[in-house]
Length: 153
Length: 145
Image (cartoon, rainbow over all chains, first blue to last red):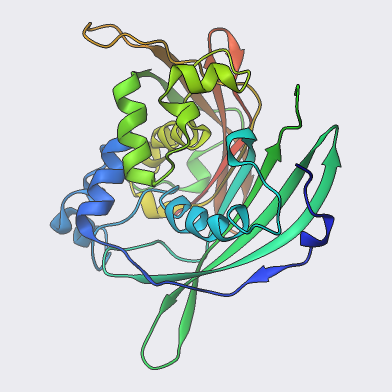
C-alpha cells in the first residue's frame, strides 16, 4: 500500500465535541502515573486558582488522536495503522484544559514525505474550547509525525 | 511552590525518578487514551509486524516523563509547551503474576534555558530505558510566577 502524496495540505474540519470529564482526567492521570492533586481534587485545583480539575500536559492527545483517526481511517489516505510508528509529538498550550471544557479539533496535514518504502506524515490539530454562542477559544495546538513503515522496515 | 527566574540557572538539576512499567500499565494507558494499537498489548501481533515484542506507547513514556516537571513546577497548568521525538522503543516484558516490572524508565531533568522576557524555563528531560535514550529533544517549557 502506498501513501497518497496528495494528502499534504488537506484539512478535516472539527467534527464531534469532546466533553472533558473529571473522571476522565483522573483516569488519564493515573494511566500516566501522575499524582499532582490538581488532577484529582477539585479543591486543590481551585487553591491554585483554577476553575476545576486540570488535565495533565499530554491529555490533549486523546482529542488529537481522534482527529488523526479521520486521516488514518480515510480510505483515500492508504495508511496501514499496524505499520504506524509515532515519530514525534508536541503540545503548545494556549491555556490549560479543565474538566467541563467542550473541545473540538481541526486537523491539518502539514507534510507528507516519502521515506524508503513508507512515508512520514506530519499533522497538526488546532484544539478549541466551545464558548457562549458561536465563540471558540484556542486551547492547544498539537503537532505529530507518524512514520508509516514500508514492507521490511 | 512558586518558582522565580532569579533563583534558577541553566544546568540546574530539577530531579530524577524511575518509572516502573508493566503490561497492565499499557492496557490502562490504552483504555485511558483510546490508543488500542495491538503492538502495545499483543505479543504475537507485535512480532508479526517485525517489532521485538510489546512496546510501550510513545505517549505513555512522554506523558509519564513529564510528571517530574509538573511536580517541580507545582502546578500542572504551568507546563505551556512540551515536545519530544521518539527514537527507541521501550520493550515491556510480560511479568504478569509477579511483582516485577516489565520495564523501568529513568527520567531526569535539568534547566536547559531561561527566557527572562517570556518568564519561562525550558526543562530538558533525559529519558533512558535499558541504557539508551528513548526520547530525544524532550523539552518542556514552564511558565514561572
